[in-house]
Image 1 (tube, rainbow, N blue to C red):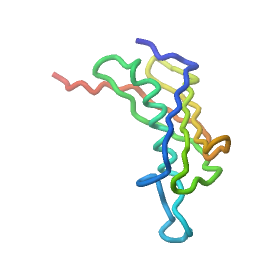
Image 2: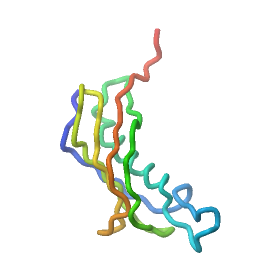
Image 3: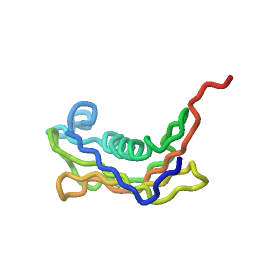
Image 4: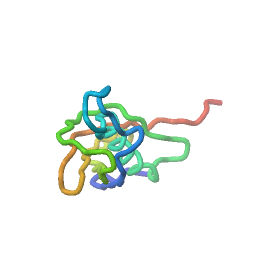
Length: 122
């Protein structure tokens, strides 16, 4: 199977639970944390290529380079989008990633994943 360079996937999510932070009580209300935002970016990227993986393989995150440029309050409805822009050696995957609340950008950047074998060695 081959990865489809140029494809895109968007995942909707609600800002709640483990995605939240109040920065140890220093904010008056919980907001989307940077690790939570990155988690949703990684989810969109891994789900984009999941069906194209050969049996016994998965992808793992290797590099994240993002800017958290806007806040999203608890309960906000957001989307995380991953766009596969480069495939190297059939296993190195580079994505543009973005999180938005409606038309407002919350985070933007790049993410890199590698295909690995998860089959037990015999």
